[in-house]
Image 1 (cartoon, helix red, strand yellow):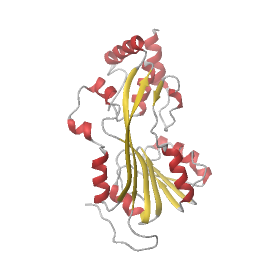
Image 2 (cartoon, helix red, strand yellow):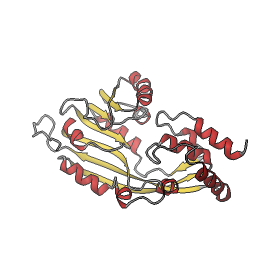
Image 3 (cartoon, rainbow, N blue to C red):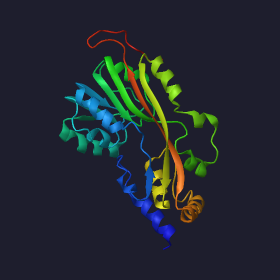
Image 4 (cartoon, one colour):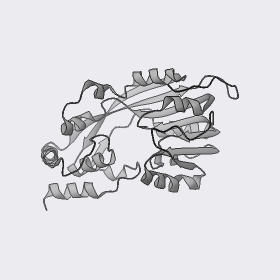
Length: 264
């Protein structure tokens, strides 16, 4: 078996559940945003009375907080991640609810004073506003526009402009404000990524399934082999991720009734 075949087989065999990226150590790197989302989120959780983490993945980021809110819930749509998040978070007293990412949040109006999310597929702004109490906060780290598109377009070819500008922070600001939220902070950064072997590329595309929809080793074997040769010659394949920190507030004071926000 060639080195290429060994690396691809290894990348294809690694489990993809959860959002633990420790397998990539020494095989791929990604620069981290300067704001330190997990640390900042933990500080807010320690001060909250009721918190919701949306699209929690395997619960790893939420579980990293030293202290959770007295009432903490999380939603997740992918069954393997629901299982993993439940195992991590139930011992901490948090409730994990299986809920599709595009469904209404399965909670009452004004149930939480803090809603968090790390890399939601698509923020459901009207629902976030609905479940927040007056004066409550949405605090999240989002994936930005054209993230890792060097790798995506290597496999898919040039994408249309609307694909490149999707997830733009300015557009998300408008959508959040349309749902009745006040944007408190919005910061964006472009971050360097490096893949040091083709196995890391294979595992990444299997784990982050929306990058190259329908990705399989068999379907992209010629491109994978050519990329392997590039990495062997150059030492790495370089791409760039985009991230933005988003903090928004629901107007009003705790305990003050407000006019409900409705979608549509």
